Length: 166
Image 1 (cartoon, one colour):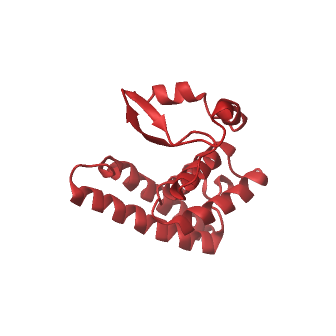
Image 2: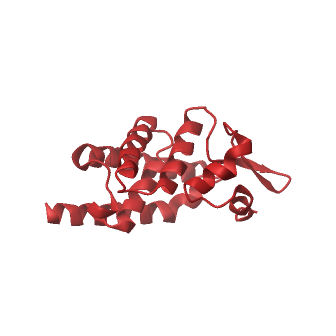
Image 3: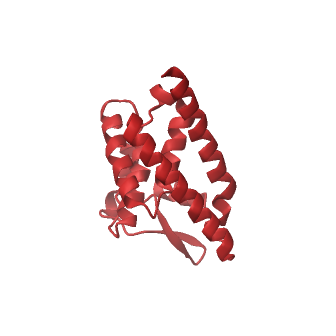
């Protein structure tokens, strides 16, 4: 079992590294690059589904901090696999409730899943595009409370967050 967990941790971190290397192609002008990105994230999403079935949510206690963050990243980028995102969200929510995962990452995954479902996000973490040089978030359920909700889960205020994109 210990070997399995070590191998799982290595596999997750390798998947995240591949994700980081190819993420630049997500919005490429070249359809072949976009397709390569989609194939990679779909393959990773499928594998995360298998991992969740076998191990549950890969927490930092189980696989280490880096691999746990990798699992979250893979779920975050499984945009065309809502079943995987929803399962990850549910398992991660349980892990957060048990103190085994962080509420910040959960908030990002929750927003991402909501937007992918065509619904309004909660924390304003997902950016729809840029208008007049300023990042525009996808619509939020309670825009007037976004900074308060963000603070509750350890996310910087919206204006500070979007300043990084400009």
